Length: 267
Image 1 (cartoon, rainbow, N blue to C red):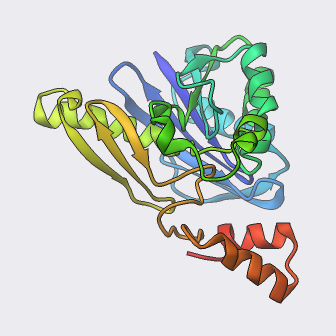
Image 2 (image 1 turned 30 degrees about the vertical axis):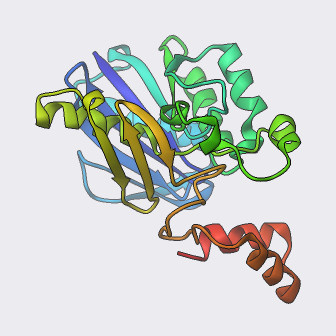
């Protein structure tokens, strides 16, 4: 069984083709600078960079598929499933689910919670519906791992009405990585991670700390967005909210400029 795994960002697509159930990665790579005439395509079959125009996610995924079908023995009919990383599943989705119209409508309804991520995941889903219409797609929600957080952990100290009205709460992220870590603990210890209290660290461009108690996430450093918590490569991490308001007044920053400052120009 071959699975196409996609992580669609605002201007990039990371991909793998894996043979399941043993998760043997056959090829992996990425498309960068989507939306530009000098987009970059790199994959493990041919490590040379291919530079060409890629207007949107559909063209990017089509480039991936054509390269795969032309350079391996895998054909379109061999792709049995497509898996999408979806950063934000809100407070209703904590499992991997087969994508249908109800799931798509739900992701559309909460895209304001992750405006930098969910619209791009949807673009990848729509592209695959067009390019591989008969292949089932699965959404794997990155925050689903943390749906076991106790209420006293995920509720912020702001008026409760804003949680009820806008679903402002701690969600936690990088749950897919933490789930993989838990499975690795099982393998290394030859015992279930559900028998242990574990501190997990996801260290990369984005970073998250997580406390796992007997198989359940009980605390996580990332919050309403992946920005909260530890300092990251381009994110400021925890900072007094009043300091941002102060900067906005002193520098005359718009909301968009302040967002760019803490998410892309810090760390």
